[in-house]
Length: 274
Image (cartoon, rainbow, N blue to C red; front, side):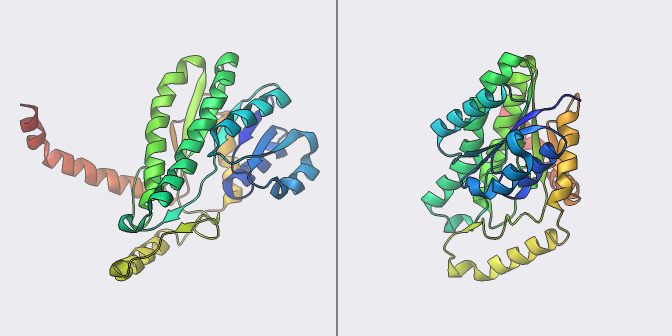
């Protein structure tokens, strides 16, 4: 198999780091971005010239375009673009500040869009490529206390489904990766928390207990590297792919409930048409 060239954002830890290692271990080359590239020093020592560390804050659109162009110039092509940079914003909807909601969207949504826009001219010109958008089971379902995060991922899902149709004719694939709970520190040191309102204290604890039960069996991020390689190597990769055991059950329950409600209220829908 011909070696691929990757551009991966948020490569300092979690999925970004594990997928960088998986790609490099099999002989691929990776342009890996991080806010602090010193987190990639050990990988640079291990893999040499096949790793290009790039300092990047994905919320800076001009910097995104510059980093993608630098990676393409350095390696001569781009085959896989992974929009992984992001974080979880915790807080009930009433608790969120304007800055917290805007910052969540700037990173998780706009950052992914800017990198995608920067990469597309290169992918279209070569007539091939694969864009991986790291979404979440939280991109198709929703739970309390992470509404801002859901807003960013549901938006990423919608724009990426449109994108997939727009670029298919150029030989470019788009896949939304939708993980369940993984031991990536997503809810730990990288998370941000809104100022809590006392009125929600009881509900917040109930929501936290529900979240703990959903994530009791967390996935292993290192195992996800094998899965992501299968997706990028597929001749016809999926538009959406769950990672982990729990997402399918969550999706089935959610969508069955939606369909039942829509069918129940279809007479109203027909009445509304006139």
